Each structure stands twice: as C-alpha cells, then as structure tokens.
Image (cartoon, rainbow, N blue to C red; front, side):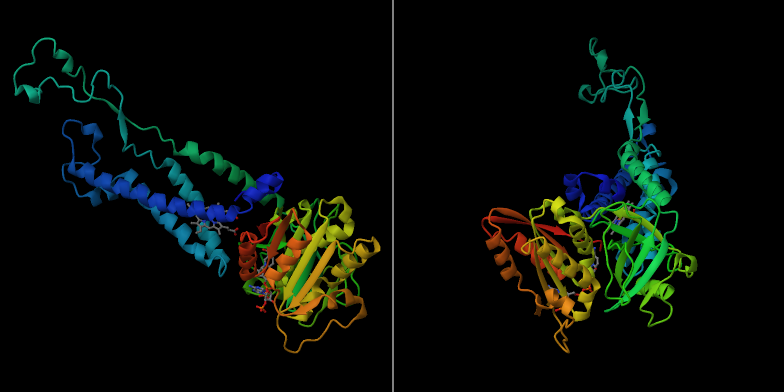
Length: 490
Ligand SMILES: NC(=O)C1=CN([C@@H]2O[C@H](COP(=O)(O)OP(=O)(O)OC[C@H]3O[C@@H](n4cnc5c(N)ncnc54)[C@H](OP(=O)(O)O)[C@@H]3O)[C@@H](O)[C@H]2O)C=CC1
Ligand code: HEM
C-alpha cells in the first residue's frame, strides 16, 4: 500500500506492483488464515499446559496447577489475553472491508486499527510463555536428578562410570527473544514514512479555479496547486472535509491548462505533460460522496459553467489532494501499438494520454493507437469531443492519419440523435450503434500488426475488462501478443 514509493519505482517494478491492492488483499487474507492456525495452535498449547503440568520443571508451566481450566489460563495470563485481542482486532479490520465502497468512513476507521494490531503483534511474545533451556550441557534432556533412579535399573544404584547420566545442575529456561518486530518493523516503517510524506504533501488545500457541469451527470473540477507535477495517466486522491473527513476518492487526472470556450462542451484541454501547475479531474456524479461534493461546488442547479476570476473566488469547499500516483495507463506510450478501451467515464485515464499525444506524439515509442470508447448516451462523447477532434486533425495535418484508429460506440439506441455539428464529423463518422464486437476488433488489430506486442488498456465496467482480459489470454491470435493492463482503483 506504499503508493508513493510505487509511483517512483521503475517501469518494470511498477508493472509488477500494479496489482498492489489485489496483492494486499491476498496478504490480508493469508494473515487471517495463518492467524487462525497460529491461535488454534496456541489454544491446543494452553490445553497441554493444563494437562501436562510439570512438578519437576515448574519454570515451564503456564498453568498454576495440574488440570487448571484452560479458559482460566487464557483469561488470566497476559500472553493468552494478547492473542485474544489480536484476533478481535483482525476480525474488525477485515469485517468492515465490505463497507469500503458503501461507507468509506467505517472502513477507514476500522482498517486503521491495523496500527494497534501491529503494535500488539510486535509485543505479543513478551508473555514469555515459550522458553528454551539455557544449560543443556550441564542438564542434558533425560539426565537423572540426584534423588532419581534410572527406570531401566529398577531402582538399583548406577554402577560407577555411569555417573555421567546424572544431571549436574537443575534445568534452567529462558523465554524466547521476541523476534516479530524484526519481520514487521521494516515494512511498517516504510509504510509509516509513506503515510507521513503523504500527510505533509497533502496538507495544504488546492485552489479550485473552475467547475464545469458536463452532460450525463459528469462534472469537471480544475484546480491549482503549487509544485504539482504529474505524468499522463496518473491519478490523485481527493479529500473534501466538507463532505467527509476520512473519505479519499481516487480520480484520474484529465488536466486543463487553457481558458474555456463559452459552452461547456468545448474547451481547449491539455494534460500535465510539462511544467504545469493546474490540473483537473472529471467525475461521474454517482454515489453519496460525489453528489454531496457537487452540491458544495455548484449549489444552484442549472449552473453549467463557472469560471471565477481569482479575485472573486467563490467560497468553494476546502479540497485536499493526495498524489499523483502511478497507474498502468502510463504504459500506453511504451508499446509500439496500444489498444485503449474506455467504458463510460472510464475514459478519464486515457484523456491524459490523448492530451500528451496532442502535445507531442513523436516523442513516444507508440506508433499506433486504437481508441475504443463505449458510452450509454451520445451526450457522453462531448466530454472529450474537442480533444479527440483536435488530435485527429493534428495527425492528419502531420500526414499520419493511420496513427489514431478511433471507434465510438453508443450502446443505448432509443431516441438517438447524431453528433450533427460539422466540427464533430471525425467523431460522427466513426460512431457505431451497440456494443463493440471484441473478437472482430482483435482480429482487425492482429491482422494489421503482425509480430507486434500490443498493449491492451481498459478502464470501465468490469464486464469489459473481463472480456478483454480473456481475449488477451485466449492464445487465438498467432503472430501478435496482446498484453492486458487493467486500470482500476475499485
Ligand atoms: N481509473 C479508474 O479506475 C476509473 C474507473 N472507472 C470505472 O469505470 C466505470 C464506468 O462507469 P460508467 O460511466 O457508469 O459506465 P456505464 O455503466 O455507463 O457503461 C459504459 C458503457 O460500457 C458498456 N458496457 C458495459 N459492459 C460491457 C461489456 N461487457 N461489453 C461491452 N460494453 C459494455 C455499457 O453498455 P450497456 O449500455 O449495453 O450496458 C455502456 O455503454 C465504473 O465502473 C467506474 O468504476 C471510472 C473512472 C476512472
Ligand atoms: C492484518 C490484516 C490487514 C492489515 C494490517 C491491513 C492494512 C492496510 C493498510 C495499511 C492499508 C493502506 C491504507 C492506505 O494507505 O490507503 C490497507 C488498505 C486496504 N486494505 Fe487492508 N489490511 C489488512 C487486511 C485486509 C484484508 C483481509 C482486506 C480485504 C479482504 C483488505 C483490504 C484493503 C483494501 C481494499 C485497501 C485499500 C483502501 C483504499 O485504497 O482506500 N485489507 N490495508
């Protein structure tokens, strides 16, 4: 979960760590499974301590007397109580993960109990229940005490020369040195350093400069922040205390830099591809956080577009930004051929990619981009219609019409209008009805790009990424390799 360190890592490491959250969940579940095994072993141990209470070696006992009720041992010894608490904390930590999407705060509060979990984990050996013998040489296991006779000799005295079987002194024991902290402290320090760095860096609020209401319940927020640097495809995490002090929501950067035209659909956009201090995100207003956030930004309905001169900054809500963090769509440029598939607002990670190409496509390894965008309504394409048309015209002017292979699909066909404005002809002529036929698309790409590695990037409803992931791994395309890169925070 050290997102910042990962954003600094090399491309190969980043690809490896791209599934960091999935890996974290797998580790979390493994921690739960092995904690159950570990605690069960302790419970069996507690029963053994009670059943095998030793009069000879009192230092080894945990029970106070033979046959003591194991439950009493658990409730009255520090070490046993500790592992009961660890399990309670772990169950709370994990149980509330299910509320992460519906009520982030419950998740966040309970999940941060991991700090207490780790502290107890590091000290849980201090009870000293498990010991090792410190004088095996002077009291070898099985040696005979002064008043003890050898069972084999039936009570007869040891003949001379056999004395070495006698114990030279009483057995001495010492609790094991607690080692848990050695295993846990490294990663924990790394994570604490990450959280501290993120806290410092996100502590000053951003300045909101523009809020735009787009069709299909999407708003765009443009912000200003000193020393903010980002690469195409990265994402930020927004926190608006006016909505919730602990909810942090990830949004991909779709940066704006220049002034807006009059209507909300046309704006000249550019992405953080050079020293820019402004950045922006598009967010679909679904769910309690985005709805409440939108009310704070645009309280009056019907306000389409609001650019306030800096001096007249309306009292927008305080907004804090954590990030930017790396994401897989940064890899789009590192393939010769890439396929970007966006479903609905899932287009946002690719908006930055398109901006970067508009700013200067020649600088990248990428030589051909297949861009497929599926939306429910025609209106949604207006979110980035200017950008798509600008890139299309630029590539035609620079005599590279084959660089961008654009396909738009509108899946809901009732009361369909067309994109009638002349300037959107490049889009309306590439618009199809219904969902894409993925196999046909992959056949087309594989026939046109023999012996190539094609980077497949997807952001949108899970159904799309599952279908594409399966196609990439289907092995049905000889002579071309499709490498799947999933984009998601959820
Ligand atoms: N960086 C990130 O991780 C981001 C992720 N997202 C995710 O992207 C998604 C986009 O949400 P939203 O805008 O509401 O998308 P929609 O639910 O509006 O769906 C977008 C389009 O995808 C189509 N679609 C859905 N499933 C398939 C499929 N299996 N094959 C082909 N087409 C399909 C839908 O067609 P139909 O109408 O026929 O269902 C629809 O036209 C969200 O799940 C969000 O979590 C969003 C932004 C950023
Ligand atoms: C001992 C067990 C666990 C510990 C110590 C732990 C710890 C953490 C930590 C430190 C974070 C990072 C929060 C951040 O920096 O944003 C985190 C996030 C997360 N954890 Fe766990 N976790 C545990 C178990 C689990 C399990 C079992 C699951 C799922 C089944 C899970 C799901 C998540 C998710 C989804 C996130 C991402 C939160 C976000 O990005 O908003 N965790 N966890």
